[in-house]
Amino acid sequence: MNTSTTRSTQQWQAADAAHFLHPFTDFQALAKKGSRIITQAENIYLTDSDGHRILDAMSGLWCVNVGYGQQALIDAATRQLGQLPFYNAFFQTATPPAIELAELLAEVSPPGFSRVFFSGSGSEGNDTIVRMVRRYWDVLGQPQRSVILSRKNAYHGSTMAGASLGGMSGMHAQGGLPIPGIQHIEQPYWFENGGDMSREEFGRVAASWLEQKILAVGPEKVAAFIGEPVQGAGGVIVPPDSYWPEIQRICDKYGVLLVSDEVICGFGRTGHWFGCQRFGFKPDLITFAKGVTSGYIPLGGVLVGDRVAKVLIEQGGEFEHGYTYSGHPVACAVAVANIRLIQQLGLVQQVHDDTGPYLAELYKQLADHPLVVETQTCGLMAALQLGRRDGKGGGTRGQRFDESWSVGMVCRGHCFANGLIMRAVGDRMIIAPPLVITRAQIDEMAVLIRRCLDLTLQDCQRNGWL
Ligand code: PMP
Image 1: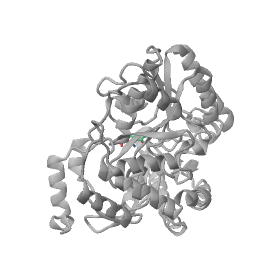
Image 2: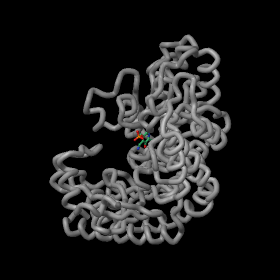
Image 3: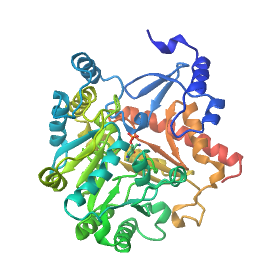
Image 4: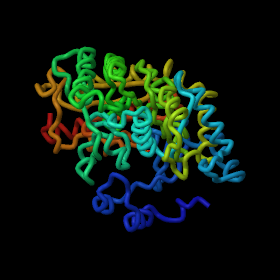
C-alpha cells in the first residue's frame, strides 16, 4: 500500500510538527507553516502529497545523480537485502559487495587511488579525514603536524569535525566550534572578494592566502588543506581556473596533504568523475558520499591516495577508527549498480560534452535578466547571483540587496509555487539537477527559472528595492 494516500496533507503535517525535528530548521517556524510532504518521484520529477509535480533541480540534496526510479538500483538493494542485509567489516571479515565496490572505485578514481575507507555519510567521511591525516603524520614521527586548514563558507558536514572543517559562521556559533587544530582562510569568491581584479588574477591571490596561513601557523605544524573543488552549499562558488593549480603548488612546496571534498563534485557532477580532474589538481585524499549511491541509500567514505595508503599500511599498525556501517553490504551493492549505470548511460561524458555546455549557454542568456548580476556554471551545477546592477558595492559586478529583504527566499517561494526546486543561499539561487536531465528538460527548467525571476522582479519593484 502507498502510505502517502493513507493520510491527508494536513494529517501528515500535524504528525510531522508533533514529532519530527528536521535538520537545519527553525522547529517552531516550520511547525507553524507545515512541511511540504514529498510522496514519490520519477526521473527528475517529484510529487507532493497534494499531487503537485515538481522539477527537482537540486537532485534531492545534490545526490540523485541517476534520477529517481532506476530499476537497477532498486533490484540491487532488493537482492542484497534478501541475501545478506548486514555484516560488518571489523574482525577480519568482508562482504562481496564491499569488496566489489572498493575495486570499482579504484577503477573510476583518478590515478594513484587504489584504496577506500567506507563511512555512512559525507560528514563521517570528513571525520575520517581528520583522524587519518593526523594518524599519517603521527606514524611519520611528526605528531605536531596536526593543524588542518580549510576555508570560510566551506561545507564539510555537521558532525563535530565536519562542522569544524566547514567554515559556516552560523554553525560555529552553536556548540563551541571549531574544535582545536582547525583554521580557516578566506574563500575564492570573486563576486564578493575580487575587487577590481580579473578572475584569474584573483584566483592566484586567493590561493596565496593559503601560503600566508601556512607560514603564520608554521609549516611544520600544518597537516593538510581541505576544500571542495566547487563550494556547493556555500552557493556553487566556482573558483577561477588559476586557483587550484596554485593551491596544489603551495601544498607540494610545504609537504601539506591536499584533501578534495568531493561529496558534491564526485561521480560526474562537474562533467568529470571527480571535480579535481575538472580543475587539474591531484589530491592525496578524496571525501565522497551522495552521488556514489545517487542518494538511494546512505554511503560515504574516503578514497585514499598512494602517499597516505603506503604509510598507513606499511608502518601504521592498527588504525583505531571505523563505523558499524563501514562497507554496509546493501549500500555497497546499490553503489556498484549506480556506478555501472553511470558508466552504461555515459552520464559523465554527456554532462561534459552535451548537457553541461547546453546549461552554460542558457545561463549566459539568463545573465541579461535585470535581477541577475552574475551567473556561473560548472558541469551540471549552477548559480545566479541576484542583485542590483547600479551599485558600487561589488564594483562593476553589481550590488547586493539588503539582507533583510531576503530576495533569495522570495525567489525560492516563487519556485516552490511554480513547481521548481531551486535553492537559495542568501541571494544566490543554485541548482544541481540530476545528471540524466535531457536538453528538453533543461529548456523546461530554464523557462521555470525565468518565470520565477520575473515574479521576483515584480516583487522587488513593488517594494521599491530596485
Ligand atoms: N561535504 C560536502 C562538500 C557536502 O556538500 C556535504 C553535504 N551537503 C557533506 C560533506 C556532508 O555530507 P553528509 O550530509 O552526508 O554528512
